[in-house]
Image (cartoon, rainbow, N blue to C red):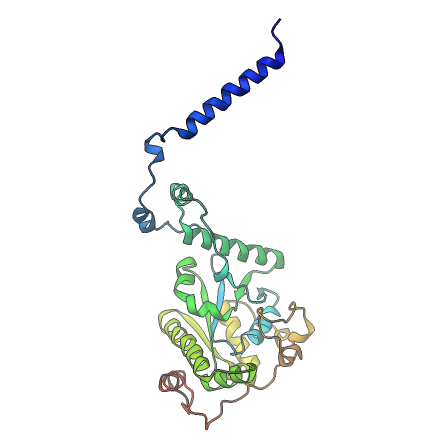
Length: 290
């Protein structure tokens, strides 16, 4: 009778021999082994996937323009969910293998559309958890990518929140330990240029931080009319409601916003001179150039 142990050893040796032969032999050039040229892959643009959230609302603003105050006022409405800064633009999809893009293309997807689908899913999840009907994302750097947001959500709505560029510069200067004035001017100008592009290109509802703090009832009534919901007086008493944690990277966390009360906007210094282009933008937005 054949020893079963010897039979198993023999099978193992034969298998090892086949594997070694495959390892040292040249690869077979089948059609499946030929990679798709990268230039044709890069040229592919996937069709837009249907969105779970068809018409989200984006607050477009420069940093230090009062977007957190606007957020908590909107979030105080029974129909509006305005969470902390969502930073959707920093959520990326990584196609980790050479063939992954080809597999996604066969599903009529590309990297951008995969990311858009992820962003939409995050929005939908947050809206569903809240039990409300409208979701607002107020992340200021969204202003820098507004064309992509518009491509992702053609039916999105936009609130443009303006503040005097001089006041933004002053706020950033005060907030930083060792402020680089040239860098701050460049940062505010970058936001300002993109904000002005969006203001001209999109169908937007424009409010100013100065108006929001001086006459919050009138301003929020206008916002509610734009969003198609009835105004609620409780919006003005945001301090009585839960808006999550105020902390860095998620929005303003200063004592002003933590106070729970709408406080007057700090005016721009009329004696402070702005770079020419920032002065032009200030004038275009209805502010004294300074």
